[in-house]
Image 1 (tube, rainbow, N blue to C red):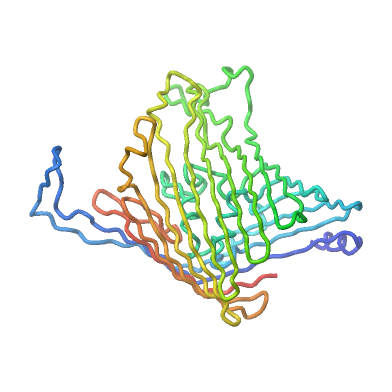
Image 2 (spheres, rainbow, N blue to C red; image 1 turned 180 degrees about the vertical axis):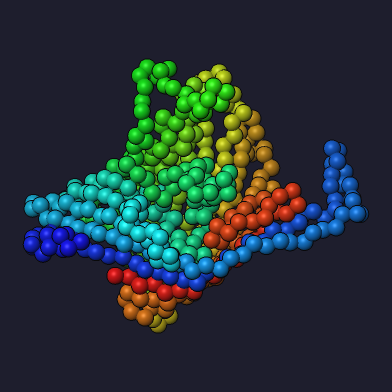
Length: 424
């Protein structure tokens, strides 16, 4: 750090900055499951059968209280620098690490929030490294809570939650998507800022897996002779873009991205998560409105291999929407949002038009918060939120687990944050 500081002072055309956020909150989460059976079942002919001996077992709840570290803004420590190369060119770097200031266990050992080097000029900016994906920007920019704390919108929760593993760490988000919010090994391009309010970016992230030629030389990745696993020679690739317009009180942007989550060369099957979202905000002065529409689709592409019947492979959609508002009040800011998501499943043999979608899993979330700015860098905040699940959805606040089995079904989850944020 001392060497970097000296280097920055030594050159009038270069700068190095140390920055960060320390955010701490007292947070509580609870998730409630209920026995939804009322003693009535239905036989094969659709006639109701009543069991008078059944006693409804009510509800069960899990809860915990924690000292959190990112209730308003994500805690972080970073270094960024720029060198003026002359002729309008500049070289820059950005290294940003997550920190857990509640226990001090996570620090600048990894820069997985962002680690990029870039070259910029009149042509725009070319950026290399680990960075936000274009499709994530709309989820966080058009959320009054910035996808942080218990108030973060449900689109963000559902896309970052892997239902197959109950959100287990390192298993990716919706469909196993490891590139939902950030992508490693990425090449990004950003339009120059002098386009009359128009802005945009494109990103391609390499999978960095070994490619075999001819293709039939690709090994299947056998764990043992009786248990072959999928060959993920393309898993990890991301391609996407975002284009928007920001002028005065209006900001609107459209983004699309495709992430390869797995493939099996021998079966000719490739699994991808395609994400499309549209977000907008408008600042009226007394209040600023936010909105977003989003769809993520887990799709299996069949490369013409007769082993797999395309009609037997369903696609799963995650549709979501958000409405939010912020209202300045003196030195404070009131924040509120309502978001909802719905899962849809269908295949070519069971088209969504004919498939009854009324019983598909869905959830909604209401969040309300207040921020009181003590200065430009320090703020106190309070947030409360509630998630309601239907038809087997299991989204929660703070990733608080549910008790879910043959008796109890996830129903609702509540949470709160009371904290302080200091930026430097």
